[in-house]
Image 1 (cartoon, rainbow, N blue to C red):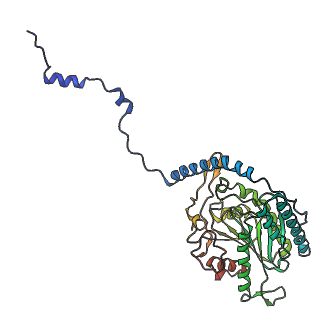
Image 2: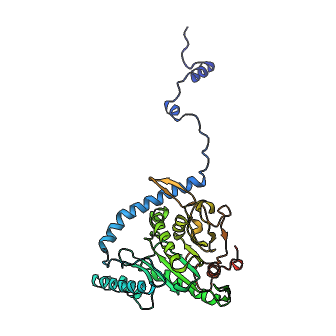
Length: 372
């Protein structure tokens, strides 16, 4: 007699064992071990990719609108001048003041009062420009002090967002340095050409000799603008030696993106000291990579936001992004000096620790520079 109903337990177990596997589970595969957390470099690259994408979108949308809202400002071509000498400085100053005055008139006729006012200020009889070009963002190289007789010279190189409209802020820092040099040099003796002890003669040069990148832009993340700026800076420094002579002590003081410019121009540059303040990196990984005989100094204020910039190189979108090693890191090899509690715009602030140390570097009082 045939029994019907449920199979015995053993049969049920065998059936369960021979049940075909679920295709959905097969597709999932065996359990995977948890992924390790991303490295700091990987996190930076992802963050940088998002930032670059946002910047590219902004540039694609905002820049054309801004350009349409503010057409290019007309200005005369810069004065044609030979490389300066002590005898021709006054001629250069006069020609560039006249060019600034004409640029002011043209900007006013164009309806741009801000640029007209900036150009007008530069045309004042007390201003001394070795170079003035009112076209585009504008270029200007201004002398504070008696360059013809100077034996201590500082050349300041600015960072991002420095244009003729914002030049006043840059010049204020140069003026603060010149004032502080004047307050110190009466206590600083140096041996003159005839063996006598005399006060040094100082001059400060505000060198806006390149088109600076915008702080919020893709160009500020690369060395492109710095590579364009390096040849004119090197050429200017050679011409400067033609004015002040080989015995003058020349210092190059570089701020923010200006340190990238100085890093690109440093190779073989005839200067005694290069100071890097508020640097996002120089494009080089060490002092030796700069290939210069100059003493390299570096400083960063305690409240400077630049500390948050990652110091790496990465190849993205066909370009090298990132500016390399931190100049205040021990591995870079610079002489690191104290910059106090200041922020990114405070290195040339009157009364600051950083300004005092920069002045000591310019004067050659390296033993008086306070170290970080």
